[in-house]
Amino acid sequence: MKRRDFLKRVAPMSLLPFAMNGQPIRAYGKLMGAEQEDFTETDNVLVLVQLNGGNDGLNTLIPLDQYTNLTAARPDVIIPENKVLGLEGIDGTGIHPSMHKMRDMYNNGKLHILQSVGYPNQNYSHFRSTDIWMTGSDTDEILESGWIGRYLSEEWPNYPNGFPNENMEDPLAIQIGSVVSQVCQGLAVNMGFAITNPNNYYQLLTGNYPDAPDSWAGKELDYVRTVARQTNEYSLKVKAAAEKATNLSDLYPEGNRLADQLKIVAQLIAGGLKTRVYVVSLGGFDTHANQVDPVDSNETGQHAFLLESVSEAINAFQDDIEKLKVDHRVLGMTFSEFGRRIISNASTGTDHGSSAPLFMFGNKVKAGMTGTNPTIPANATAKDNLEMQTDFRDIYSTILQDWFCLDKTTSDSVLLQDFDKIDLIQDSCNTTSIDQTRKQKAGDAYVSNYPNPFGSQTTIKYYSDGGDVNIVILDTQGKEVYQLVQSTIPKGTHEVLFDASFLPTGTYYCRYQNGFNQQTRSLLKVR
Image 1 (cartoon, rainbow, N blue to C red):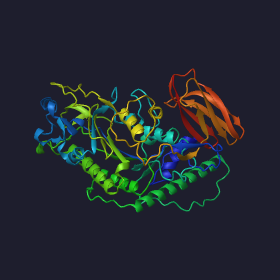
Image 2 (cartoon, rainbow, N blue to C red):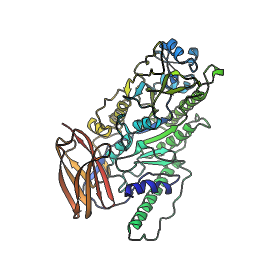
Image 3 (cartoon, rainbow, N blue to C red):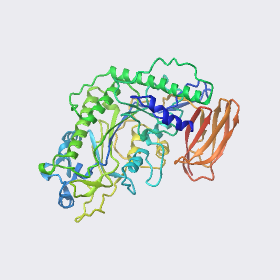
Image 4 (cartoon, rainbow, N blue to C red):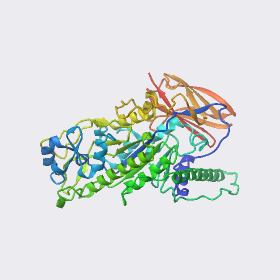
């Protein structure tokens, strides 16, 4: 069994309820002399709200200007026109009556709506479409890493070696739940940390273990012990942050799973964690049957309950972070793997469809709506679907550049393609609280390259502790395209020229391994 596979399988089982997937943590001392990695100086936080199952966009955001055609297409689930909530400044578009809290957020300039978000060549499988949203891949490519994981890998390419440290002492990303999703999977390891409840965590013992045997099994045992010790350090940081802040909003509804998660997120942000990304989720949106309650004119039912849960949870969260005075640092985004079909089915529900509306929230979003109402055919059939207006990766590009303050070249490297950004976010990268010229230590590096981006050649610089060194070049699907170094290398810093003239332009990964030390760096080949 490969070491990476071993850790992925063994580590999570020993870390409940705080779970870290694939976290090989070791403090290595001096690595490449004075060379250190830098990360972008920003205190901005992103909160991702995943709506699992495929949210019905046409009953979430209703095209009132085409209500006659919509009624003919979905008579069994249509929301009564006189119950649809209007949006200030927009004619012909309304929102579900159970979402009055988010309607108010929109009217108050704290919500931006993007119409018909999706991707080309929609895949209608829950699992595959979720993978596409998590990784940012094209429909016909498989990626192991998530877009947030690649972003965090770009900022902290040597993670988890030497983490936590004095400059980044907190988890890079936190998911509220039992496991970390693929969105946080980095180039080599998962960059996230999963928690169930910051006040009820597994307290590891002192860590005073007997010496492990000097064997392969002993080294792996020592390795897992190190993972456990670092997990304890993170759990103590999370607990300390939770104890430092108290939720101030009284709007959180009881019995709302999403609200319970966002309540924790608000508390941790206000408690001072430097964590950049939080992931929360709510399931149940696969509404093939009983989507509405026909006895109540379709105003209530499963979908209405879910939308009300989302609306009340996000509104309470926004109220909380404002009262906690951290709202200027927080941006939120909802997403679902796909929308639903235009027509309803025979079970008072809707089937898997294509694009759907997406909501971004916070005091730093620009108020308004991107896109127009989707077109509803006069005689819609099961083959009809909604055309995409906005590629979801354009939104990712916007977040990376205008919220996390990456330059376009780095953003394109993270997303593996050139995507346009959208005018969604106020000037969050030009505030006096963020000094773009000041960098902080992200940790010591074992491998680097220059120049990057490069044309046909780039120099790979690496450090060896002595012993076998293996450096390979991978494509974005993890396939090895070139063996650069495979030899016994003496201790010290070394360089090797990588001639990539035989490869097409695009993003590649340089994976380095020397004993237990492993790092992966992204390389961008341009024309």
